[in-house]
Amino acid sequence: MNWIDVNDKLPETGIDSVYGSVWLLVAFIFDGKQYVGEGKYIKTPKPYWTDTFRNEVEVTHWMPLPEPPSIVGGVDPFELDLLTKV
Image: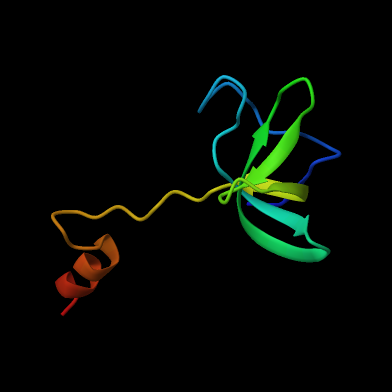
C-alpha cells in the first residue's frame, strides 16, 4: 500500500458516517511535530481532519488501514500453519 498525498486525492466520505471517512492511517502535523496514526477526514462546509483524540490535525498523506489478522478457532492462522508443519 502506498501513501496518498491529500493534494492528489481525499478519501471517500459518507461511508462510516454522514460527513466522515472511515478511520485511516495518516501522516500528520500536530503542534509542530510530525506523527503517524489513525485519523478521519470530515467533509463539512469547513472540512478538517481529526485524530483519535478528536484533535484537529494537519494531514499530509493517508492510506487505508490494513485488514486485521483473522483468528480461526482462537488460533492465529500463522500459528496454525506452523503447528501443521511440525
